[in-house]
Length: 132
Image 1: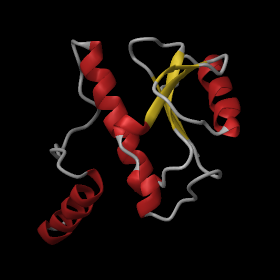
Image 2 (image 1 turned 90 degrees about the vertical axis):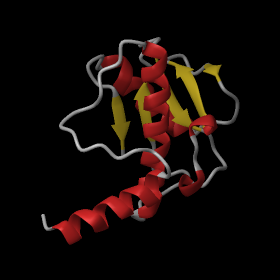
Image 3 (image 1 turned 90 degrees about the horizontal axis):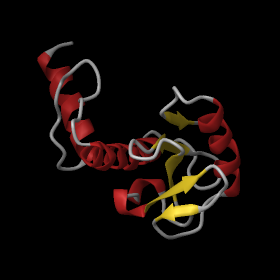
Image 4 (image 1 turned 45 degrees about the vertical axis):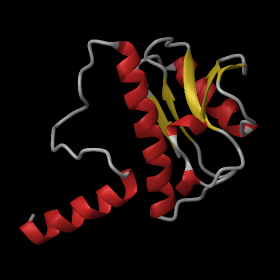
């Protein structure tokens, strides 16, 4: 990749991710503190929604992204209804358990997102994130 292409890519990613530092690496960071990992994953999940919006993927009822919580592996983070994907922040996410209860955060959740993603997370403990 040329320097011009790298600069363009960096600018595009910076525009989508905001002020987060961009670090070239081969794999996710490793955390000693699970609460730091949780905050990181929530920020990445929110950024993923913004990337979905940036690239024109359906938002609202047609697309969902979830990530398993590192502090409680039987729960996962999902977006609330009513916020455009391009505007989602980590504070807009809620944590749900596999029975459909919101255990952290507030808001309405798309039933289809819960039904699909809870089954995938429950059946596949090695899966940490689901997007479609």
